[in-house]
Length: 330
Image (tube, rainbow, N blue to C red):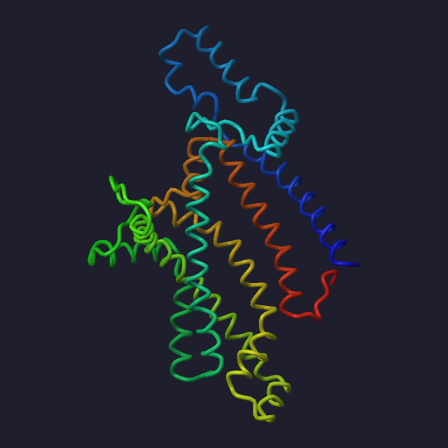
């Protein structure tokens, strides 16, 4: 099977799983208590005559496509979604496509910066601790990493807020930019980075702990191999042995855990965004659930589903780049 056939097969797999999950998600949200139409109309029921309210109710239900049987609602919703029409938000009183771009940008920006921080620290730290296995530095790092990924993120958030926003007021605790600031260019970017500092720090703690331990374990396994001993016996420099021979062969398990961590990172940012009032998809998802804004919630959930499915394919492709002996069809 060639790479083209494999990718086609995986694409069909993604499409199939996407539709199965979409059906399940649609049914689950339709089973949740609460009437979206009544929530959208608010206090109109008490301020209008019953006949007028019922007419408005029917008109709103028709506009939201909620007056048809569930199968018809699903087909209409999926058809609209595939063409870029994500429905109407009863919370924001706007089409979902008009309100989701900015939060998605904020979420991607927050998670991308977190990934840069985590990989910049965790990979070198994992390599160093593997090379210095069982030393004082290694044992100290192991204790810190265990603590880092064992403590829930919301606990770390509260600790960081208490230390760096209350006791030592260095960073802001909410928002994406300073209120009333009309800066542009570098000043605006620095202001956003200043607001991102605490959320990124909190999200990086558990990531650094987990990735460091996986890199360390993978490197220790590889450094025990006979070909590493042979490379050292040939007189190769230690840096060449570690970073060229050992690290490359340790990348397979690292790629696996890294891919799943990245996928989980986007989902995990829901809590962080809510704690720090970061206007991203996570906070919007929580608000949408509270308001029974199903069109908005389903759109965000399907974004996470696509991210997960595409991540699996990219992981398979990354295997072949890391180790040419791995064939895609296997």
